Length: 223
Image: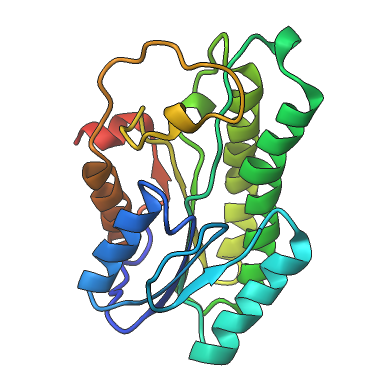
């Protein structure tokens, strides 16, 4: 456990802030007194929302600079962006593989490396790799690989960020009822068991931010 953080008065950037988990994390942090900037490719009528495609490294830099210019600091970054695809590896197109890694992996790396030099000491970065990063599954090989890369990045990046006094959390929630599987970029989802409620997952992530945790395994979401 690292030091706890009081998010009241802190500036938070939530990438994927319009999604099933990101939106609830944003709302929960606002209730705790944080100033929250949300970002996604979708436009929503919410104060502090930025429409941006974070698959482009220059856009990640521009977004962080915008937060710094408008608020003067960045204390917490939560990356909740992601896409999913289904299908055997041999039937997954090159375009689909590229989309998975650009959105799930590259965008995460671009955003984290843009944010870290600007973050306050004691700050927190959250990357959501998911349970698939613990054990990949047939029919999800490319997707699972893109998320396993996120987990691996978070592990090493967390050690680098620690030198600057910034904590990195890798969150691996089990299957959650966000509806993401119904919006797959390719393929059809298998029949999943009932997943966790998004509100429960979001609150668990917020608790980890506040309480000084650094690793949220899939098992930790059962607590």
